[in-house]
Amino acid sequence: MQLSKRLSAVASMVKEKGCLADVGTDHGYIPIFLMEQGNIDHAVAMDINEGPLKRAKAHIAEHMLEEKIETRLSDGVAQLKVGEADSVVIAGMGGLLTIEILKRGADVLKEVKELILQPQSEIALVRRFLQEQEYQITDENMVEEDGKYYPMMRVIHGQMEPWTQTEYLYGKYLLQKKEPCLFSFLEREEQIYESVEKKLEENENPNTKKRREEITEKLERIREAKRILISVEA
Image (cartoon, rainbow, N blue to C red; front, side, top):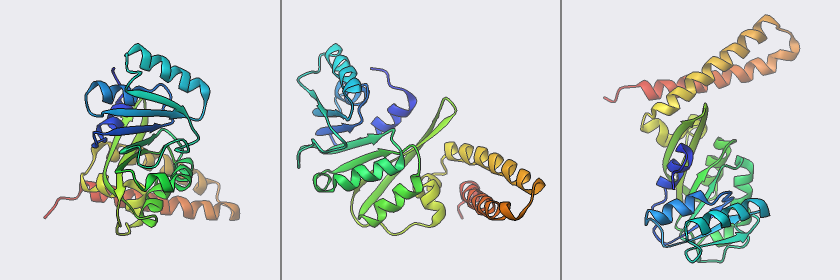
């Protein structure tokens, strides 16, 4: 099984060898890959829609893994049993949906050893939610694929100290590791917001004042993150 760059990066963050629950499994690629690599012992591939689940079942059968990977129609982790999974992957969903799944599945997720999260949006809100709900981010990664940037994180239970706003936005560990992919993302974001700022300056009126302030603050955060990435440790 050959994974895309994004899915490969997500799969590489799974450290627990027992049972994996893949939420929103779509084609079932991650559990198939991890099973074939010998990195997990069992998996539950879950999706809220019948179509993706049928595709996952077909792929699982093609790889002759029906006895190792079961499929379940499930809204989030609703059909996951307490203590059943060691790892839970929630990848490719919006940040607000990711938060909602974590909220609704709080009881079953208490027994999970690790979460691998790859939200597509509202990532600062996800990071802040994790800190408030006594989850601890232990590692982060970021990859670029087909012009899109995908941050992801490994999470365990435990108290995490509050981060700065810049760390919530761009990832404390990505900044610490001076992740080149993050720097590339920030360069692109800076260009986009500078272009917006220029247009607002050219068409300045009372209605654009609030938007200009928002853009100015966004650019300050981007530039702060870039300074951290290029700083030299003493």
